[in-house]
Amino acid sequence: MAQLTPERIVQIGMGFWPARTLQTAAKLGLFTELAKGPMTGEQIRQKFELAPRAIPDFTDALVSLGMLEREGDGPDALYSNSAEADAFLDKAKPSYAGGLLEMAHDRLYPFWGDLLKGLKTGQAQNESARGMASIFETVYSDPEGLAQFLAAMSGVSTGNFMALAEKFDWSPYKTLCDVGGAEGILAMSVARANPHMTCITADLPPVEPIAQGKIAEAGLEDRVSTAVVDFFKDDLPKADVITMGMVLHDWDLPTKKMLIAKAYDALPEGGAFIVVEQLIDDARRENAFGLMMSLNMIIEGGDAFDYTGKDFALWCAEAGFKGSEVLHLAGPSSAAIAYK
Image 1 (cartoon, rainbow, N blue to C red):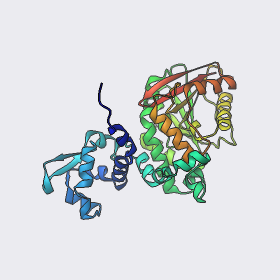
Image 2: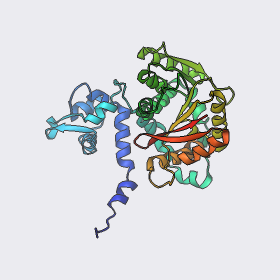
Image 3: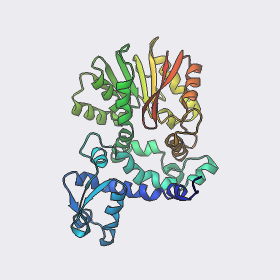
Image 4: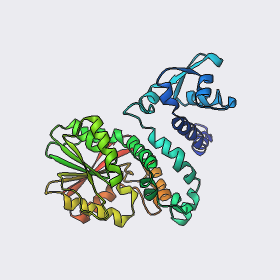
């Protein structure tokens, strides 16, 4: 029998060390700069105006975490991006996934310091707990904050949307409306992978010009359009498929059921309603990221929560859907699909 050690406990308990190190590097734009070419520690220090004490600990810590590579030793050593960091943490690449890390650096990290308070009170511990407007009011009223928020959502979801576009059988359908579509990544992913599909990405008014810009950059204006929708007030646009990427988990149960009912009403007979989330496994034992995401929703919304495929199936059956299934996408993320 292997001897028990506290190593895993310490790694989890001190997990904020590597997390904050990576968030800080992403916030600085270190990986974007190194994508242009290797740099010495001193060049990095000067570029980002760091104190002398920061080097080499900061850069070598990133080497040990597998985010940077180092050629040589000492002051002349050259640092460069690891393959993983180069692919996903260079802001100049369309695959950039660092928006979530930047938002974690600026917002989530300090809010999670109040997790215990959130668990005891059941109340949000974000801006609203500090006498400020809610996250959505704050984000949607600040163009820079909105751009960061949308980039964060795209960063965590792009791979899942691409997987959905490839794995789901789109052949019976012709039209899609992505509700809460942010930058339009889901709609564009489906359009690219399925030339017969015509897609709409729908969101609030401040989001529309951002999505239109992304669609124009992709050259998909002929098959991807935008719509302005406030799903609390408006009916959803009619389409063969209604999708929601990381939307349902933002809300309490009555709001979740309201959105499911609106999706049902917008679909034709035989249509499909698809949600993309970090679905918690039905036994609630394995998907740690999904469960952590649900804890994050306490921080962000108090009574908002993530859910299982079984939960989704029950709510959709109550709304009138005939059946449902779960399609695994990538990592901790899945698509829950209900058929009308």
